[in-house]
Image (cartoon, rainbow over all chains, first blue to last red; front, side):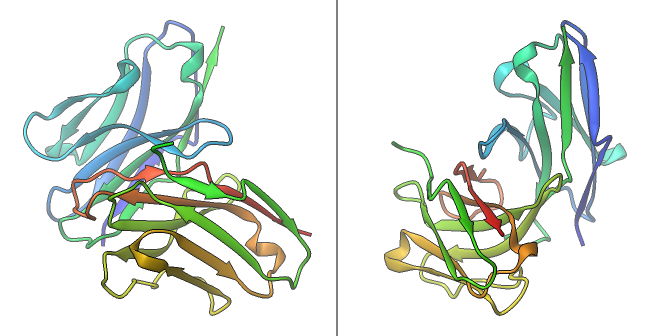
Length: 114
Length: 115
């Protein structure tokens, strides 16, 4: 069965510092991978996704993620954190062996210090 | 608007009462999902609708939970005889056709509080 592990339930960075949020998945076949962001009292919003092709994926708000099959990872990065990046981030995996279900990680809350 | 709409945004009710939560997906999206998000937790899958196919209810936690989708559009999640452990944010999402590579578009959720 597919699963997603997000290392660190909380990450704190200073404004302007590198953001690195870790995500590892388990799947016998490379799945489709997604990062979503959730701001307080809102639903989840897609940041970026990897389906096929280029393994470095660029998303909105300056975020990017790299699919590394050998490491079964899909870590999310941003070179310079902004206060507005403070939110909860969810990594998710789907298919091709998991059926229709999207499996979400437990989430990582990002704090940005001034 | 063009996004997924959920109502009510907040619901407070007494233990034992029934509640209905509504989801209006993006027009043209055939796939619809319900999730539950408890405090500090990830998303727990509840139910999935795809077109006219029978819904997959494998995530519903008990027979007190049910959902329907009328006319392939609006969906209602019903919780009967609510319990305090039902308190959570209930999120609805839709996607274009349910394909694996399609992202889900989420509503802002209904925050349910059981007293």
